[in-house]
Length: 46
Image (cartoon, rainbow, N blue to C red; front, side, top):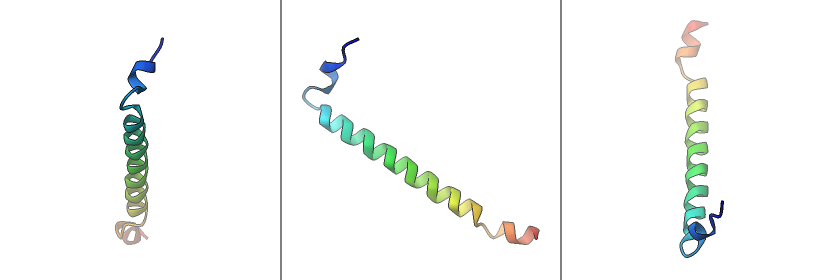
């Protein structure tokens, strides 16, 4: 399959949007997992 037509013209924009979206998803997931791991509820169980 040839996907060269997808990346001509606005291809760089699509790549930038894809990379930004991936980084944003990773950042939000990391933040939420850290916040969940250090929640005050965990201290009440001890």
